[in-house]
Image 1 (tube, rainbow, N blue to C red):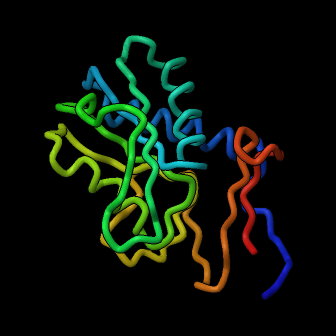
Image 2 (image 1 turned 90 degrees about the vertical axis):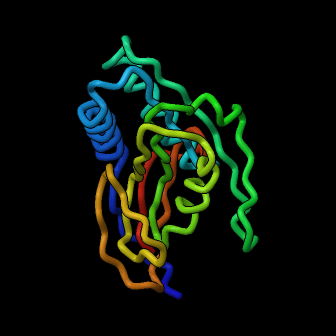
Length: 171
């Protein structure tokens, strides 16, 4: 396996794309009073926290909630936990947030958490969409779409989680 890493997004680009995604979320849900961001642990939740902060800044009149969902990815059955009761999302717009969309499995599992909760609508937001979807999942809001080969790996580094400067790498 190659050890060569190619920079996809630097710190400033991640900041710009995060802000653009937040504005897209706001524009798509302009009439809504409540928006629930559901961040997938770990980096997806960090990214959701950033979007949450930006949305609070640009739309202080909106009721914006943030939920962290932790998914056991190595099981065949859905096994997920949330830090907030999922009922707070009832009759609201829910946006599932992750750092990278690859096969769609993680986002599909996160969608499943809300299957028995009546929602107004559900959307997805990712920093990078790799376009290798196995599941019928797509990104409604994304920072960048990237065509890669299956052997390549996308790594998102977020300062709050990784204790390194923000960056997205292809290796």
